[in-house]
Length: 199
Image 1: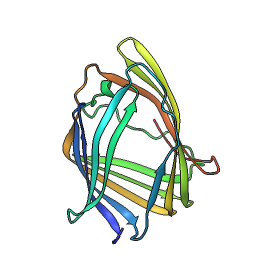
Image 2: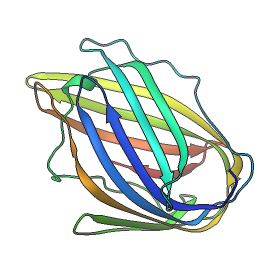
Image 3: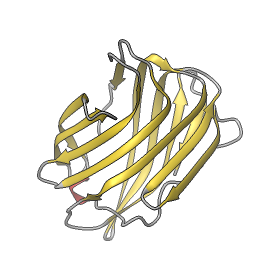
């Protein structure tokens, strides 16, 4: 990047499934200018009935409206076409512990603005997201377990972090049948120590 990145907008536009949303965000301390590398995988998606094609793009702009990144998607994902928005009900809760590396996590929402703060006690060059959820669709339960490794260069630095997100346009998701997701996602560091947990 040719300048520090401390905020901007994320525009999600996925084909066929009509998933569209526009959000603005701020990030502190932000990402410093210079070479950046973010790698996801390798991983294997489970083969389940209801697998669907996910196509479209996610574009990111800075606070001046200048393009930062654009990601084109063309993948097969289990049960994606069944998922629909929950209208703001439910939500994500912390299932972390006192030994987590991400400490003092706080989340608050006012209107369409969500603020999340926390303090990271180590640098993170790589993490693994351990997904263990159950998808409930009508009378069917489908367990979904997978590990998603990610690496960052430069590493995410330890210290205090703050993220604010404002929904400029509420997500629109069109789907055939409502689906409920239950379970948790545990984030581990390279030493397999827990960074945080959400449910």
